[in-house]
Length: 239
Image (cartoon, rainbow, N blue to C red; front, side, top):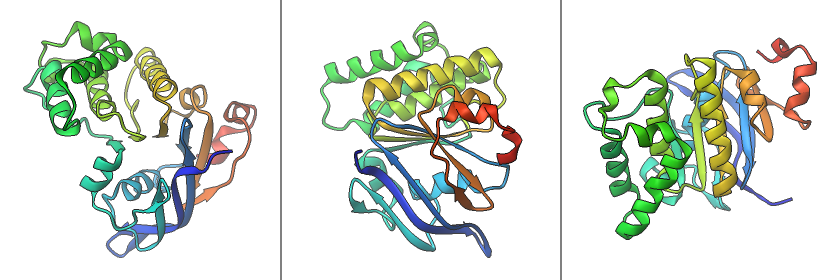
């Protein structure tokens, strides 16, 4: 089995005097789609923020591709190939879909040829055909699900080696949830990246992921089996 590309060892983190993560351990490998589940307030989003560098680590280490990145700034993690899509739709609502993607390409793909950038744009349009249809429309006039597609496409556009997704399907209709999770699964397979998805919509997540990590009370609960097997248990045990 390959080594983990992203690894957290005994990581503690929190907000002010409130510690949320209490020595958490986590690892994901290249080509793996990992789902993180757990109750509200368990520390799932805090874990992603710590992995991306948005939240300082108080103890423990985070390693990426064998390198200690515990103190590395967000911009350096992004440049190294770690992408992050927050719960909020971080898009430019007054710009069109195409302009949002072009702006992300200009920032994330320094040194790429125009031909390579066009090819990459077509790649995300293939993942999200709805965005191709609406590429000239202002993002702020689109539905919540379509805006979420734009936000996720911006996280994918720079060809990350690790992609962190925080609750990408929250508040969306079941048909849109299915479309998003299918696109995320296709992206993970085609790009052979490590993808980490925090999700409250557990049943849709378990249909898509390779592995899961259960976070509860700021700690991880080991689970080595097939994610689909959880359906045979009382799912609320973990929520």
